[in-house]
Image (cartoon, rainbow, N blue to C red):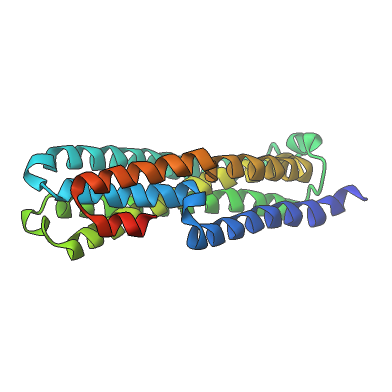
Length: 242
């Protein structure tokens, strides 16, 4: 295959591979949530909100500190994303003189148009990461107020609402983190389509290892939930979790 044609074949193939993996992950999260880390963490956060709001006067400080740690993590990722976006913009605007020397280490299409597409894709990726983390901070800040409201202690509707907003914050944080993951193959695309395709294959295997749970983890999670509900004296929750 000609060198200029590699980008037309390997780049879409690598991105389709990542897209198919995330379609499978979304389907598994919706239909079999306990098989994924995302689903188990969502159930754990729901249980945590119920525990914190059962006595907000006693657990309020702990709840706010925990949410504050998540806000700090999202703030750090948002800062890194917008900083990298600014650096890429500056680099693109000042790299016109070094284009010939940089193209010597690239095996693939070296046209100026494709180089612009590469940098724009990376910039867009970091901007999406920034926006997702900003939304995550927004939901975390909202939850930090709701989780300490005393009037919500005995209301299951309030617990469900707070847990739903907390999970939304975590989902946006996960999306921002996925955007950072996607930036790795896009950055390697600067050096040609072969590094991008190799990184997509490696990233798909790595994410599968990070996103899925073992049978031992599911059993441990299920048994811990049953013990907590038995201590709380809620037999309906036990039947629901099993």
